[in-house]
Amino acid sequence: MNIPCLKYLILSMRIDILTILPDLLHSPFSDSIMKRAQTKGHLELKIHNIRDYSTNKHNKVDDYQYGGGAGMVMSIEPIAAIIEKLKAEREYEEIIFMTPDGEILEQSICNDLSLKGNIMILCGHYKGVDERIREHYITKEISIGSYVLSGGELGAAVLVDSVVRLIPGVLNDETSALTDSFQDGLLSPPVYTRPPEYNGMKVPEVLLSGDFGKIDKWREEKALERTKTRRPDLLD
Image 1: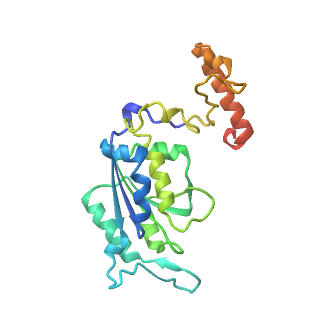
Image 2: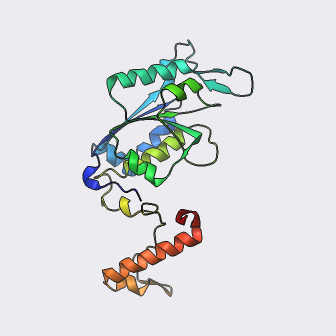
Image 3: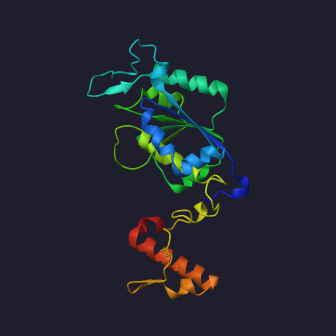
């Protein structure tokens, strides 16, 4: 189990996202928790349009792949230019490439990234980026699942949300994120709220008992039971 201690977590983070479709990323970060994180100063988010760094008169950022084959490849020049510019302004602990063949995103990765101060995320498109970018600039490659999306923007939004919510002060209850599913290697137990009975459906008596020792034990048992049933792979 890899849970960051709150007192060692940073209180703010800067994330730069490199994309050719910046409009796709405005909505995920303009509401709810991500909006509050920025308003409260816990998150500084910058979205950069890679096309702004193209030297092509039509702002083209892709080209045919050497050796033939279907699909275009994102060119090295504009991506390298923006990465070099940002690196000259500050030090980045991670430069992440969102790609289907990257490491599958797990809670432990989110925990580790929440300890960073500056992160850069590159969103891929087409058949991918020129391999030289991955070889010389990228420090970490992440996938959000074994499937292919039209681009890396949605994956980047998922990654940012899963990391930023761990920063102390972002959530109203700082302990909430540390009791989520996967933080202890298990799924979360069932949860209930008022009323205690609805159309004959009752809340388990133990949760109404006020005996927090019994409640904690019940939650541990239910979390283990749910994990065995739904995600036995986590127990391996």
